[in-house]
Length: 297
Image (cartoon, rainbow, N blue to C red; front, side, top):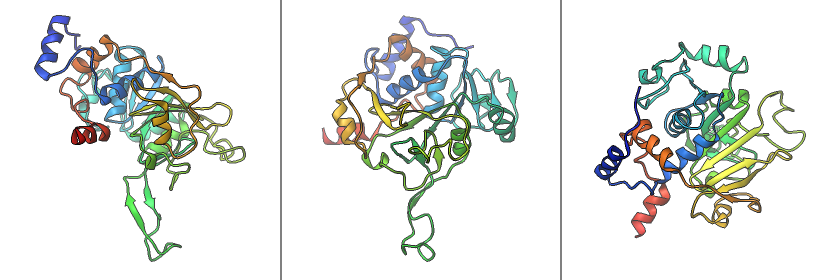
């Protein structure tokens, strides 16, 4: 089992990579914010990339009894080397079950063992609905009602719709841009939240579980209001003005009760950097805002 470095070893590790213990990148902030939202004793369906990064960190810090589930059929691993796909053998380490997707969604999720799902998407609207299918008309130009075809086609649902429909709670990870946070998604791929107002909720459409959504972007944490299901600003990241979040959101975002996130702790960053992703496969990436700031500066 991977062991945590001593503080002296950690200092050398940081120096070698040009990092500082008190500074953190946007990707590191996203991973920490996600980990803090994962409940202990939960069954967490996590995709690769940042979702798995956050879940691994949670399992090694705040949620040691969390059961990680990878949709290709891996249940209950204690991962030490970051997998790069949902069927990467590195995700199998000390797993209780290594089966297939039919078992993951049938035996596990349909029986109610899906406490939290962690998803992403191209668009997220005010109710937490996700679009990972298409921007523009769904149908080709010759058969669409508008005469225009799709502007962009994405990978589609994969297992996202299943997870969104069956999970008790959803964590959504997004880049925060106004075009990605419209009032209403162009195509509803996955219902992660309430879905809509009274009469149009997920429960009205026969989905008996879920409705609670937390959206973690590169600016903040949005949380679904238990009364109307609309996402509201709960936590702004350190150094982020709530007004900036509102400006980058496509609906009249309620920022009246916004708090400021406590920065990542020394221990959280140490675990994240030295155990979860020491090669910085994902932690080494930069957000569009960071790249734009570097270009402008």
